[in-house]
Length: 446
Image 1 (spheres, rainbow, N blue to C red):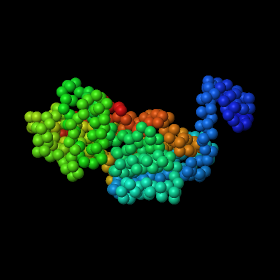
Image 2: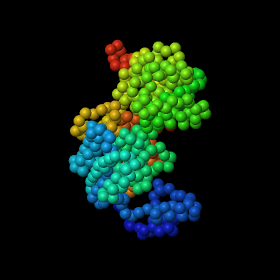
Image 3: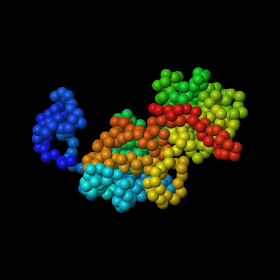
Image 4: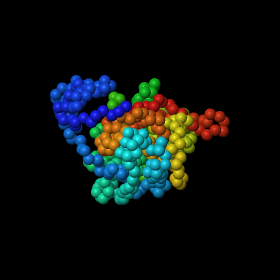
């Protein structure tokens, strides 16, 4: 059990030797559990060049005593929704720093933590409040970062597009863990922001795949997308349109509504008479219940109508019963009856939230982010570097967390939940029971 004698430091030559033969600079043979690698001179040169590029200094926002984080809040977010994210964050940091719950403080599980030094550090949180138009956010973020360098952004919340914050994190190599946004930046090359999902775009993808898989080919003959003005419906429509094209389908007919304009029962009747769609994709939030209720009575009604659960929000379960058989709902969360219960740790984390709104899922998503943060603090041990944090995310196991059916990771993968259901509303399981959502599809993975 004794530690072996200290060895000389590695240089390029002795590193190559130990990797190929298992013999370290002191001549000691490594345990056979350590693999030997048949590396060419060229690949060995690439590896040593990479290692020499790593810093011996900790990343900004880190010292021997603590790690400083920040979270971003934009000014259009209601106070209630801000608190739904900030309260669990602050409670977690207070609980961590108190060291009163050692088993919950995962950093103690690492080698440095067991030494009661090294890896354990207190956590600190700054709140960066962004005001005004998104094109002014970059300057505000740069001023915050210059004043108080931080190691990473935790969460963050905005109802606007996240792209300005995403681009800032990319240019400053600043990790951002799971912001509360349904309008993430969609990027194949982005590295520093880890999202819950692709947001509204992912619902549009699912709608296209589901419709294309219908048994009756006529369902896809004439597809009509009605797109409410605004970034949410725009992303839904883009996800549908681009996936529909990938599936080899003819471009859908589209109607783009003007700002403030909503499709009404009368305008729907005219549209259906003119376009004769076999499927209607209705990316609209308000007025949907009235439209669907009257569609049932129309002879030229399309075979199916697709709507978004997120656009409908709290109005989802008020859809008229006569419209249930032909209405399909994109639903990017777990089935309600199979929702994962949050752990005992969540009880103190949620203390102080004034009025939780389950449909917003802000507090539960923040809880999920904090569970991932705990794992990352353990995984990093004393190697607290920004790029190490992002590398470690790619190596995490799958997690069973609230909200999403599958929460999984992979090297370079920046969207942890990549699936979505198509749901329908059904009557309650017993007379007098509330209506319930029931999946009409498997968990569609993208």
